[in-house]
Length: 265
Image (cartoon, rainbow, N blue to C red; front, side, top):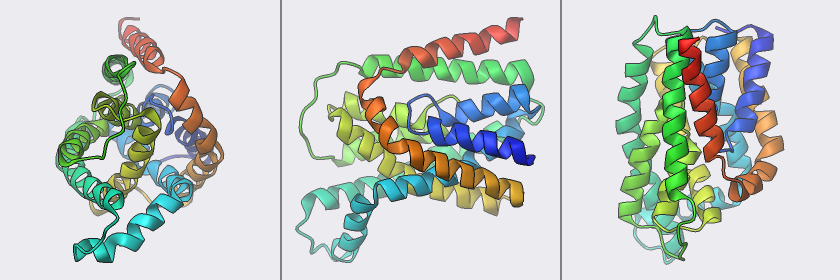
């Protein structure tokens, strides 16, 4: 799978890039394909595996939100709760997670099916998806924001688009935040909802990886998770603020163009 040094490097990249709309999956896949000699089929499961660390970092960062949702679940199930905002968020997470799985699982299986897809071709493929991510962010930038409660339609839209982030190069946070901004949510709430919805989606993806025996669980794979968690926890607060203020769309577009250019060199 990975040697120890590779695991640490990938964990650091995942821990930092997860909180920015630049596709952490794309970043780690590009590194593995171009520097560690992996094919896309080999890199993609590892990239998904690295999300375990940042998932736990997100749980720590959003612990108050998560506690409120979990505390409300028994009353939510009995339809007795008066906490309308928490109810709306719980419904949003349930629907979006289900739709993410329906869309994302076939895409993962499709991508890992290309066992010989590596090197320049895989890099160019990721580059195209990075450009798509960048243009989606450009479209969402500058949208008028309004205070609104999240609804069923929002849950369907954001759950579907999160499913497409199973492909390396499509930024999960970038595409979900862009969708929420297009739905006129303010930037801070869009980011918080995006991070919240990542937790059940990542958990489901990791269970799927283990059930399909796509990951070798060893000391190095554990080191990658620990590295991802530590650097994710150290950077999430600062990068949460950065992601609200800085437009990363051009970064995605330029990196995408450079990745495609590699194919012709």
